[in-house]
Image: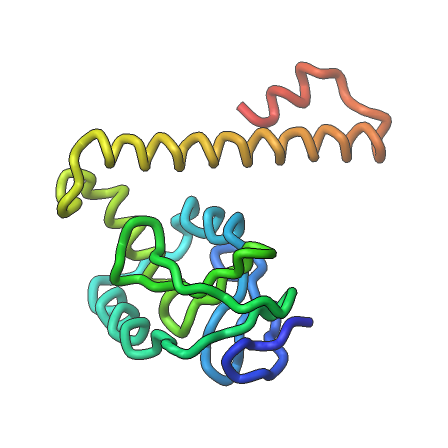
Length: 175
C-alpha cells in the first residue's frame, strides 16, 4: 500500500465517486492516477450545495502544498502542474508513473471547477470559443478511447470466462 508523500503514513484505499483512490487519514490528501481523475470528473453522483463548494475551495486553497513531494509509487520527484487550464489549481504530478497527488480539498476543487466549466461554457474567462471547443473535444476523445478500452476488456473477459457471447449482443451492451 502506498505512503502519503507529505505525512509518510500508509494511505488507505477508499471509493470516491465510485472510483478507488488512496486517502491519507492524516492530511486528507488523495493519491490516484490521471485516468482515475478523468473517471471521477466524468461522474456526477455526488452533488455539492453552493456553501459546501465554497468551503471545499477554501480548504483546497489553504492546504495547497509548496514543498517538494516524492512519488508514492516510484519515488521520483513530483512536479507542480496546473489542473487542466486553471492556474489556481496546482496539483502534484509524477512525470514517470503519471500518479497525481491532490492536497486536502483539491480533488473536490477539481470536480467543482470541471462541473462549472461543463455547465457554464460561455463564462470561461480569457478563453476563445475555439480553445474551449478544442478542450472539450480532446476530453470527449479521451473518454471515448477509455470507453473503447473498457468495452474491449469486457469482451475479452466474457470470451475467457464464459466462452464468449455473439458479437452483436456484446456490442449492444455498450450503446
